[in-house]
Length: 484
Image (cartoon, rainbow, N blue to C red; front, side, top):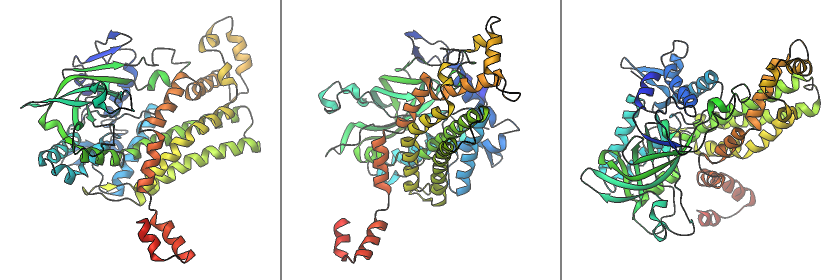
């Protein structure tokens, strides 16, 4: 059976090395900065057992229940079920959480698609990949991704500077390989394992490199140190910042100080072709869940903006309707790309149903590049009160409460308390430190924008437009041969 929230909490109370604000964290499940988001992850596990949500969060096979998010996708219905599960989670928790495990396991599926590449160097590696994918389905771990190294001076190769700026192998043993370096990863401090892979794609003419490795990294392994940024959950009251106090996904610099990776957890090693393959195909599955979360973010902006204009009676103005329509177009553009990616899905080399890459990657560009403009548009619709409204304490204090009641009550439907809650929600969604953090996170969480466009370039079918112009202009076949 899939695990419960309590079982997940017990499993991460394992004396792992976590540091925040210069101090060692004794229990990540109770520390005030981590507890809100850890409880969200525990709730996701419990949703698979809750009678109200178990049918959308889990599926039965051979008399056992498994998590929908980790199910291998073979049919369009599998992808529809995954969409429904993510929607159920976002509705239940009331916000957006990106690192849940369902979006990162897809990176392992991408590696499975390259098993022929892995077999070139050692068949054991593709066997390891397959075993870990099936273990994830059976055991339901909180699985994240470890992708971004500190990198150092990017004008120099790693061999010409401190080699630890990129994760690399320092020694082979009978038990496995020993690695050093560091990785940034969201949610690592309260996850159980990560797929660690290289962050550079230009290997030059090298066929072998100690920097070309992919492994399963256990978060509690000896030598793994989690150095976390200060979170937003403890900075303010939940009344004034209802999102940041619940949904801040804490980011970690994972220092890998001579960490032993057993051979059974090595997915590829020294194989630059495998490293290049996974960099090129890394998000062919995981981008779907990532973009779907931005769709939820769009819904949050639309709802916030529409409530704000309705409460002040501005919804009937044409200029306001046009701005709301822009938000709706942004939202439906994301929805259309996700829907089309599944409608046009194709079988992958491993036999999975792979979302259409061109539709998925162009949808990601649309969602990420338009997001800052949509945030600002929502600010316009909310008006200046989201940056000048006093905090909750002023609505409660005896000396100021009557005045807050007077000036923040609009009519019998919009009384001061509801209006304050909406303005606080809007401020945290659009204007707070957390809001700025989330905006940057969405832009870079699946690689920077130039890499998003690179993925589109590699996966768009250029032959269609070229063929049309060849035919329309009466060009010879030679031009198509030259382009090919």
